[in-house]
Length: 368
Image 1 (cartoon, rainbow, N blue to C red):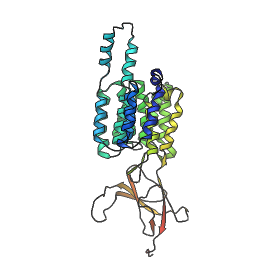
Image 2 (cartoon, rainbow, N blue to C red):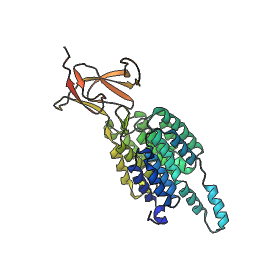
Image 3 (tube, rainbow, N blue to C red):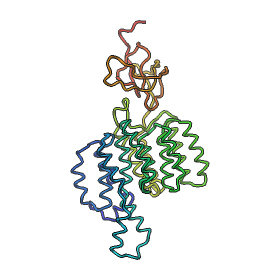
Image 4 (cartoon, rainbow, N blue to C red):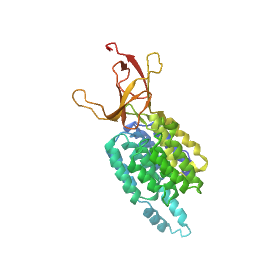
């Protein structure tokens, strides 16, 4: 509040509202007082801060009304209003560049709104499918600010889950005329496939590396994306959901959001002096393997069935929780949307969900 308008126009000022938002991550309506306090901050910073705090509060909630509000923000058009104002003031010596800058400043919170749609909808399958369709419209008809943010939103909605339709869209926009759209698309490709060793994505990135061989900025992004694709040689994931995708890790979301908000101004932050912000991704990294131990915490190889998870909530009896399974011996890697169950009755797991590190106890009723 005490900062001057020029200080708030600095690109690094975006981290002030981000810090506020991360304090209220997932708090819902508890942000009313914070939003009221932000009313004294001058525009366009106020809109940016309000939107950022708002989306953090509803992260992963799937709140449809919030998504609708954010779409309203995305559909606003600022340039016309600015031109009217400038005509009234009759400042003929104003250059076109200044006009563009004002419009960009006024529209900066639209990029955050696009990220917000992904952040709110990523918790559930249907919401994320609907958001995907919306992002398609924004990419085709949106302002430049929106188009730069959409690849990042696509990455957030499908972290470590390389869906073919998303990869194809990002691959198309990695050759965009706007350099910032192509930077963001290439990085988003890395995030979508992070830790999956996806062969198709790796081939796409190799082609991009040849295509952008003479452009150091794009090449830097391609190398980043390649590193993310083979994260931990394929044993790590950036997905913020755990326990059968029921619980959201707020630390992981905070790490992802910090990096993505910085990418909204990729030219001055990531490709400028602050590339170290990428270390924020470390907060979201977690192993995606299933390792089993006995009660003495010694590794215990047992056979497990790994297959696609089936939603069995509310079904009578004991329905099968996985489909199309294969039998492996632990340790084993679990891909996105996969679930594991023990193939032997000799041991009983201490936790109901087999994920990460699991302690097994001997089954007292087991007979050989």
